[in-house]
Image (cartoon, rainbow, N blue to C red):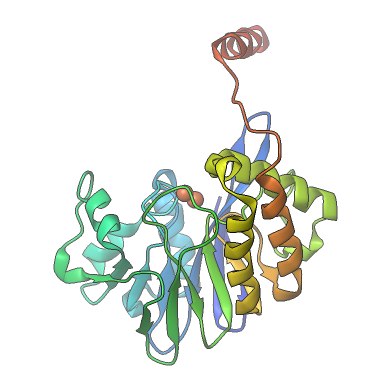
Length: 265
Ligand SMILES: [Fe+2]
Ligand SMILES: [Fe+2]
């Protein structure tokens, strides 16, 4: 089920909780920036396109959208992408050269409908400038988040996500331990390469977000986090690099799970 809430006066969140059996819930967020040129940030999961379109219509007429900022091409971000491009001939999809390349392997993007950005570049979208940022952690090489200079919100893509037992609308409502543990677990699952990164190099990346001083951090996989939580979010990510690496269930565990499910049925 996809629900919506307002994270800022001009920013709506579309969110659903994806259960990972035995581990918890991961929120899947997309965002609508209701500026003079409305921007949709990501387009929900492939398995939820009908629900996503209904939730989107509840917050904006999709015909009014001018831009889709595609943070990356994973299945929890591209669900309604092709549908929106087909429905609305004015939408431009902000992505990277690599994003276009990856999409060309499954659902090619029409080249006259894309707008290519690289980290550090900015794009004017009516009443605001969006500055492309490579977040400190990511799970797809085409990942590009951005900083909105009007709302002063950092859209961080998968970075700062967390696996949670329950998902509030405001990350400030999470306990310190739920946030920290959930974030570290997510980071070890989603960006396992963090374990191989030099600590000083990671600290420099985290400092670049600190210097941004965002009013809010909007992750694809965390409830909206007010800017005064930035230090906590950054600290968890720093600690993730030395945390226990994630090892998923193996075949023996899967067979045991299937046996238990059959017994219950
Ligand atoms: Fe991802
Ligand atoms: Fe994601």
